[in-house]
Image 1 (tube, rainbow, N blue to C red):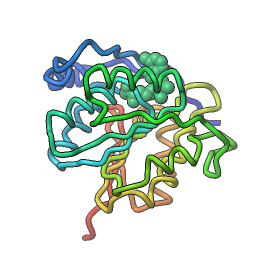
Image 2: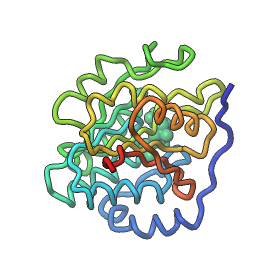
Image 3: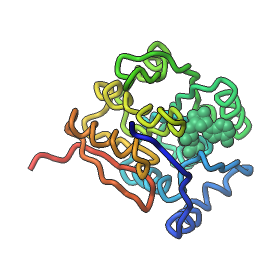
Length: 221
Ligand SMILES: C[S@@+](CC[C@H](N)C(=O)[O-])C[C@H]1O[C@@H](n2cnc3c(N)ncnc32)[C@H](O)[C@@H]1O
């Protein structure tokens, strides 16, 4: 069985990333950046995509510090961009929504609670976000950036917990949407990328230095 083990130490790429993110970090109160949060280097790639690609419709599975930082970026960009985050843990969803509200960021990002439940696409019976709650988030314009950083997948047996994200969200993605999977240096996420490439036209750049896999559908040759 595929297992996800160990924590990932930050590297020089992340220290540079923190420097690049400094304007966003300084744009509000202190944010608790725990080991569960995305690495700074990976977050820089997502910010670059939002700014350079003029992305406006972002969905994030698994909320936290990244949600607040991206909301600060969307406010700064002021192009009508919004972030919908999905969170399985009710207390954490409330906490992140409170952080957003405290900074007047609720019109740029919100967290929707979606409990984990048995799911058609769950690997070996692993649960995923309850369908009704997710459907509501995916309604509306096609998603331009999909960030997959949940559900948690570090417990033994949970390594493939994030697999359903692409099969579920694929019909709701814009043709040029990017899909970002965090923690790709873990065995489970590496296997998920292989499976996603087998089931879709998405091709992923595995960026070990940033801890993410960055996917898009290649332009026709
Ligand atoms: C990998 S984390 C997602 C982190 C988020 N995308 C970020 O980069 O900040 C996955 C889950 O861990 C939980 N989580 C993240 N940060 C947490 C914290 N500081 N305290 C409690 N739970 C946390 C949430 O339930 C979240 O959905």
